[in-house]
Each structure stands twice: as structure tokens, then as C-alpha cells.
Image 1 (cartoon, protein in one colour):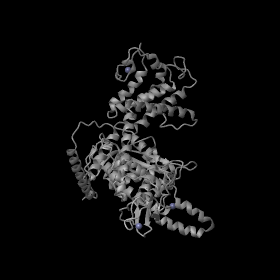
Image 2 (spheres, rainbow, N blue to C red):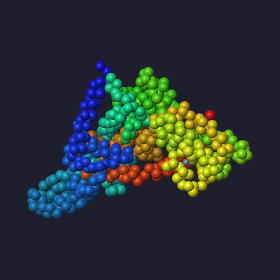
Image 3 (cartoon, rainbow, N blue to C red):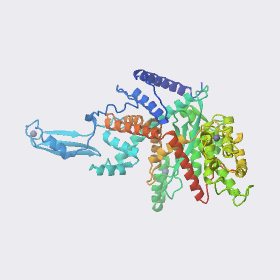
Length: 605
Ligand SMILES: [Zn+2]
Ligand SMILES: [Zn+2]
Ligand SMILES: [Zn+2]
């Protein structure tokens, strides 16, 4: 009996149930011809199928008909009123005891953050009380309120913490949220709930990856898959890398966050204790021992460079137990630290791990190589008596950019086949090596080539002098060789990791200090938002926090955000996205040239 068998059986049962649910949903929705295209659209479809299978409500929604019925059940919507307004209302009514009108007065019997208990008493001694929130339904808590819980979740979504929430409330003429000790209790409930929802979401991503894997599960129930890995870190000015995060995403369709590990060299408690050390070293030692025993936030002591690699090894090592997966192939950018660490760590014993280059990072090597050649021939005359750079038909910065872009796009459009990739890469060389008098276009793709498409296209603007081409030919001989290109065959990009990272940092403003715990929560929140969108993530999260009331205004906001993300993505058509990428590459290239010491990716040698 394999060690993962019981977990696999449990997962299979879950998957079957999900499948059943998905089928019943499918039967109730009138089948229409759906054109699911974008990644975000696919994710939202999956998320909404989840939502419908878990909710008991009969309302079913698809992405298109979201706002066909904009009626909001107002009795469940919160509004802001002053206590005086409620008193005015009460005083328009008759007292049930003495039948008088307008003899009521109010008294706040208790305030817990946003929640008020108000007592209205009549001069006849009749009393009635009023509260503006229901209590949280949560096994570990007493006297905690939905409204305060939601304020805490809100502060986390926007990344403003308690201080920011106090500002917003103050500007709305509302007293501050619950005091800091109580806020921390709400924050604890939020963190625990977040962990549960995050693990579910990562688990679904793992199931999808296993289902789409080209390899079947082995006798222990573990599947080998291809992932993309990358790292990111957060620094405050003047510190060197306080927080680092190693991230792993699936390469399935749509790609999702599979796992991540946060590392930190900083602990709030430890640095607080340093203040005691000076005047009372003994007490410091005692407190430090206690603190270490109860869990220190700092979990990395090495250099910040090794941070990402250390996290990556952890993530790979736990993949079998956590997800029933082995990350036996991974796509990564130029950083060699991870590769070295993974080779040393051997997370899967003797089973080899294959590394593929990120296509985006890889194609930048062409630029590095061409720039190196250009520098080498600086001040020299080529065989036609002219310098290498300078003007039309020579190796200008724009030409280097164009050559790099066409090299990258040749790889991208032939990513699954080494032979045709090689041909396509050489084509980009011959393409620039030709003039109308001496054409060399036989092997090019007519649909992409200006010269083939437009008979009037001035090829002299386009071509590069043959003396220059002869000089850069060795670069192409290396960059278009089977040995070099085999590193990107069947490869992918680390784009999913990069957009996940931008989600994380949008929750951690660089101007503020963040504890290790806060960064970990931000990474969890970013993962579920990236994987499942806002509506599913927060519906599950609020349920897990014990919020049971219907919250139509909140749901509406979540749907709006999801739909807006979808619209933004659709607006950027493929063409504009490509243009944006080219612009980005060009700016980066110009910035690189300005810096005296440049960071070179895999310099050509
Ligand atoms: Zn009365
Ligand atoms: Zn510590
Ligand atoms: Zn052509």
C-alpha cells in the first residue's frame, strides 16, 4: 500500500462529487454556444460553477446575464445613519406602554467598534433596545460581530490595515473600529479562515494540473507535472530584502497558483526585544527563549539571494504530500540559484528534474549577444569599410531590438517542435539579410512578412548590410543551434508567476512596514484572487469567518470587480498586448544602456 493511497482515494471521491455537481449545473443551464477564450474568463467560469454547486440559492448566473436583474433586496443593505435620526424616527411613534408620542430618549449601552447597543427609554419607564449587527457564528468566539469582522476583511482586501480603516471611518463620521487587541482577534479569525480557503483553492489547482498532465499517476497516486517557478521579494528602502516569496504555478489551462513559500529575515518581536537587551540582558535572554519557543516570524537567516532558492526547495519537497504531485519539469527565468539548489536537494530522490527556460527571458539573450558583438567591433571598420553601427542598414539599437523580437516570436510560434523552431529562428536571420535585388525570403512566413505582404514596401529600410550580417552570423550559429534551442522546446513563460506577484505587492504598499505574518496572508489572499476571482474567494472567506447574513451589496461589488477585470482583459486585444510588450522591451533596453554596469542575462561568450 503506497503512502499516499488514502489521500488519493479521498481526492478521487471529492473530484467525483464535484463532477456530479458540475453536471447537474450543466443540465439546468440552457446550453448556448460559448466561446471561452481568455484565461480570466475560463477561471471565472470555473469559479461560478463552484459557487453554484455550493450555494443553496436557486438563482443561477452566467458571466453575461449578471446584471439583467439589478434589483437589490434593500432590507439586507447597510446604510449610514446618525443615532439622532433613529431617535427622531422612534419619537414619531407612540410608546406601546403609555401611548405618548415623542417622550423617548436614547442611551448607548455598549459600543464594540462599529456595533452599537442602544437603549430607548420613555419617561414612563418603558424601554426597548436596538443593535446594528448580528453576532459572528464561529466556534471559537463569543461576542464578536459580523460588522467588525467585515471591516477587518475590508482592510485586508485593500491593504490599508486598521489605521487606514480608522481614517476612512473617521471621514464618514464613524467612530474607530474595535481596539487593537480585539482587532487582532478578528485578524486571527481572518487569517485562519484564509488558510482554509487558500488550501482548498490550491488543491483545486493541483487536481486540474493532475487531470491535464500528459503522464498518468503512478502506483502511489502521484502525478508528474510541468510547472513554472519564480521568486519575488519585498524590500523597504535601506534594508536588503526583508521578505522573499518563492512561487509555483501550474502550466495547465487556465494556469493557477499551486504553492508558495514566504521567507523573512525580520521578526517584529525579535526587534522589539532588542530594546530590552540594553538595560536588562538577563530579562532579554529569558524573553528571547520564550519567544523562540512560541514561534519566531523570521525563518531565513542566509543571504537574500539564497532566500528564493531556499523557499523553492521547501515547496518542491512537500509537493507529494501536499498535492500528490511531483514538479518534474519546470519553466524558470535566468536565475541559476534555484536550479543549483534543486539539484543539490534532490526533492524526488533519484528522479531527475528537467529545467526549461522561460521563453521571454531566453529570447533576451539574443539582445545581449548582439550588443556584445556591437561593442567588440566598436571603432573598427567592417569588410565594406564602414563601422558596425550608426545608420541605416547597420546594427542600430532599433535593429537589435527588431532582431530580438523576431527571434523571440519565432521561438514562441514553434515552441513544441525543435526542428521547425530552428528553421524559424534562422528565417529571421535570412529575412534581414535580404534586399529586393538579392532576395532571401523563400523560407519566411508570408502572413507575417512586410516585404511579402506589401509589394511597395521599401526593403532598404528593413535590410541590414551583408558585411554586418557576416559579423553577427556566429551569434545566430550559437543561438539557433539545436543545443541552445533545446532548452526552450516545450517551454513556457513565467508570466503567471509574474502576474501573481503583482497581485501580492498590490496588497503590500512599499511605503509601509509589513510583518512576516502580514506578507504571508497577502500572498494567500493574492493566490485565491488570482485562481478564483473575487466573488468565489470572498464568498467562501466570509462564510469561513462566520458571516452568515445575506450581503447583497458586497456580492454586487465582488461581481463588479470580476466583470471589470474581464472587460479590461478583453479590451487589450492580442495585438495591443503584443505592442505593449515590445514597448516594454524597448524601454528596458534603453534603460540598460544608460546604466554603466548592466545586468546581463546569460551574456554571450
Ligand atoms: Zn411611555
Ligand atoms: Zn522573532
Ligand atoms: Zn519575408
